[in-house]
Image (tube, rainbow, N blue to C red):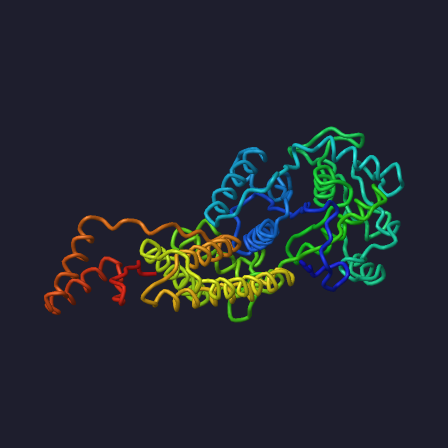
Length: 470
């Protein structure tokens, strides 16, 4: 049974879906004004891995992740480039799709955009105003935070603690609020900004309202899971709860999940655009295998921070190559495997036991670090078995099925080894003949030549196997 650490209750809870066999999950997506950096990608990869595991366990997942396509940053970039805000958004939505596809992230069931939901947003705000939770001030609309008596429950902060920080803010916007804690639902348009007509005049939505609207519109008033990065816990997700529950009178989300940061540098700083210490996925995939990047991020438990460095990326590449070698070894032996025998029963039971350990680890709040350890255990088991003079097709087929299924949860897809080009095939054949003739000098010469071409050879009792250098 799957257990989830719920940020709202600060404990692990048994997952019970609203509708049996189905999961409704909303994950906050990017503000599309630039390429995503690997810190942004952490959230995308983490929740894609969680989604894949739910599907592995037999759930049907309705996965919604939005694009914030109207925002101060988008407007600023549009002005700098001399284009419209929608053009900026379209450009970086396409970039997001290309970069995440490279990381083998499955597209969401739906990627709603703010600009496509403007009537829904205005209607939502109107309801909050009618209920006394929202008020208009000079064309802006604000949320009365104190009216929502459980404000602060997600981030575990009291209203008094929050008031101290809010009271230190200054500026025109603060002066027109009834209370320093109040936040914007609708923002009055400035000269030259993109805007929409509303009962309060031309303007555009505040940031927090969009996710409340799109989550409830596409998943219902109460959703199973709401996810995002730790930095969204307050104020974004706190404000989503206040808005949504004030409007519907129902619990907004049953489980709140927040992924850890990607850190960088000796001081383990959070990677962010504001600190200028980020590396975009767009840049990194030019020099690093995207599968290595995916493996690096997917195999740490989602709530834990990940330290990015050249060393940790090299470790990920080495570990991934170990798994690739196991896959190739299985592929190499399958054509020579014998049929099922009575002796296979014990081995199949061992595979069942390994599978159960994998499920136990992943059921425990999607602990991918422990889950990948079981994958390594399976790889070791398979490699040991492959050294036998005879191997069973039934055992290998089951082992391969588990191995590929589990790797796919982490977003890793190995394909069958490709054929060598004619030159290399001839060299391997020539080397095999040279070894038969005990011409070891020529055999070594060919091995060295193949190594220069990135082909490594392993001489085993079952024949020569090859693999590409990592």
